[in-house]
Structure formats: C-alpha cells, structure tokens
Length: 347
Ligand SMILES: *Cc1c(COP(=O)(O)O)cnc(C)c1O
Ligand code: SF4
Image (tube, rainbow, N blue to C red; front, side, top):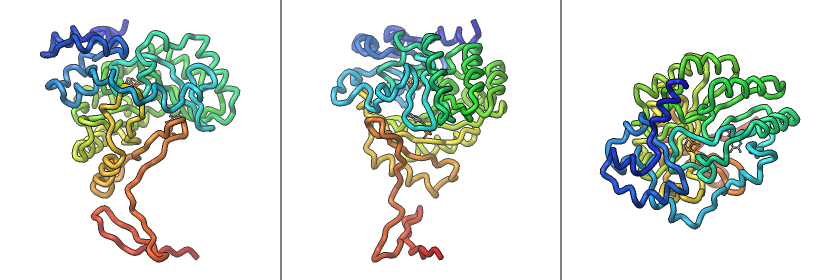
C-alpha cells in the first residue's frame, strides 16, 4: 500500500466519527449517509473551522439532501447518452469515460450523486475493454475525458495501463483527467504518479477548487508537482450557495488559482440533480459574478460560466449583456458600465 492509500483509509466515513471531532448530533445524518455515502479525508477535515462553514457545507451530509423531490437523479440524461457502460458520448468529437466510482471526499453537491460511492459503479475490466473498443471504433473521437468518481483514486499501474491503451488509438489526440484529489487528498500527487503521467502527453488535468481556503500549502505543492511535470492545469468550480456565491470570494479564488499555476476554466451553474437543491443559486447570481470578474481582474482569472442543459443538450456559456442594438447602431457596455457606440463596419 502506498502512503496516500493509508491516508485515504484514515478518512472518516460516518456521522458518529464526525461527532468525535465536532459538536454535532450524528443521528439525523445517518439516513442521509445510508442513501448518499460520506467520506472526508484527514486533510479536508482539517480545513473545517466550524460547523456550517464553506468547507463543512461541501463535505458534511445535510438532512436537506433527502428533502429534494422535485429534481431527477440524472437530469443530463447521461445514462441515455451512454453507448457502452461507463462512456458518455454527447458531442461527436469527445467522450467522458467514467473509470472510477469512488472519490476521496464525497461532495454533497455532486452531479453524479446517483452513482458515486456505491459499489455498483466500479467498472470491471470487461467494461473497460468495451469502452476502449468503442473509442477505437469511432474515428471522430479525438478527446477522451477520464472522470468518475475520481480517476486518480486508481492505482498508478491501472491508470498507466488505461492511458497506454488509449494512447495506442491514433485518432485520440488528447486525454484529459478530471480530479479533485489535489484539493481533497493532495498526498495522492506523488513524484511516481507525475513520472507516469508525463509519459502520456498531451495530457490535461482539470481539478476542482471551490473556495479560497482550499488553497493550502499542501494543495499548492500538489499542483506545483503536476505543473512541473508539464501537465497543464485547469479548474472547474461549481457555484454553490453558502460556499462561493459572493463575488469577492469567487474573485479571490480565481486569483489564488492563477498564483498556483491553475487556469480557471469553468464555473458551473449547479446541475438540477436530486439531493442538491440547497446549494442552487439563481442564474442571475452567476452572471453577477461574471460581471465582477471581467475587466476587474486578469482576463486569465475569468473562466466561462456555463449551464449544462437538461436532457444532455450540452454546455452553454452565459454572459452578461454587453451588446445592444439601437436603431441599427451597435452599443457596447464596458466593465465600468460605460456605454460606447462601436462602429461596426466590415469592408
Ligand atoms: C462537459 C462535457 C464534455 C466536455 O466539454 P468541454 O466543453 O469540451 O470541456 C464532454 N462530454 C460531456 C458529456 C460533458 O458533460
Ligand atoms: S470529486 Fe467530483 S465526482 Fe467526486 S464527489 Fe466530488 S464532485 Fe462528485
């Protein structure tokens, strides 16, 4: 067993263990955990300052998860868009491949709450073979996104084998890994892992920081090790009520990410997934955050704010209204709210 696997095994996964650290009543949380599993790593637990804070909200079960009856388990129709188990093929040129069903910390707002953390979801090797056969047989797939669950909870040897088999398919130009372990289990990013990943370039890694307090010496060191291995790092945040729905918090997060060489890629509007309603914000709030970023800080610190349309209709960027037409003339508004006429000529 590697050190990170021992650290992962030291995580807490029951309300009773949580009650050993904080003054909470574990009893009402038991039913939540029976439906949606809990796991909090030692590192992430150590970031909690008090019950209800932005770290706590992301990882500690809440009875509200069981009171959300209006939404669906799979609003993005991922299961309908799955040609073989574990693959989601929504856009012609790229696929999401769910290679792991487990995560270091079970985020309470997870869009795949229906399946992560349950023993049912772990792909067996026959399923991996079928997925690889599908990718190999579909020449239009040039981008493969490893997701889950968390692909970096696979052992180095297993991941190395998957990446090698993907790399043997000529039309697969790039591979991306989506992983939250730099944030939740930074011990997982080891020199041995980086040496292995380095062999499989061009490889991109998108991680998932949601709050400035998640940027710690440990998570910064994990990102530095990956960046030094030549792996471009991006970040996908989810806009979460009571966590990062204040413009100042989001701006600080984006700036701090750049300082650890992670480029903000997306801010996601919460998907309409059952059990996550207490995190949802109005779309206008996200637009307000984008207005507070664009022009007010580095363009590099300004990701796209996207909604993923229900029914698998795809991601759509949402922008503040900067443009309007007035009697055929183009009026453009800048970040200070000043409007100017733009001479829209092409000749
Ligand atoms: C998000 C997503 C992708 C990747 O989208 P990009 O905009 O290219 O990052 C691909 N497939 C599915 C099913 C997705 O949900
Ligand atoms: S790390 Fe990602 S897949 Fe895992 S629980 Fe969190 S949001 Fe879901």
